[in-house]
Length: 122
Image (cartoon, rainbow, N blue to C red; front, side, top):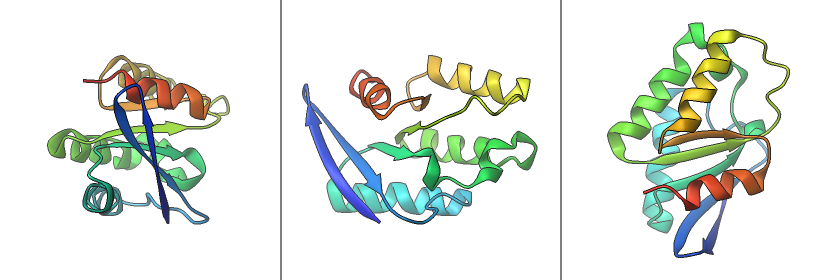
């Protein structure tokens, strides 16, 4: 895992890069948040969808909800960018839409959109 700091418009965002899955369980997501905070003092995290396990996108596993709750409880903000068009589950589409209306968890098609979302959160 490599962490790159992006400073734009007064915001500090940690972009997490890697070659292997980084979010596979709620514990791994919390470890990611804690590591990023410790190493960078950032609470805004940008990550590619390729670094998130597929179970996250199957809402019946409960993984997405657990992870979202961890980020809410610990004050972290996460933007996951990537291709979502292949997911046809209405509950997942609703989850993505509702998350994008909030201030802590975002799903975007591009890295640039994800940065934009994270820059404009409180």
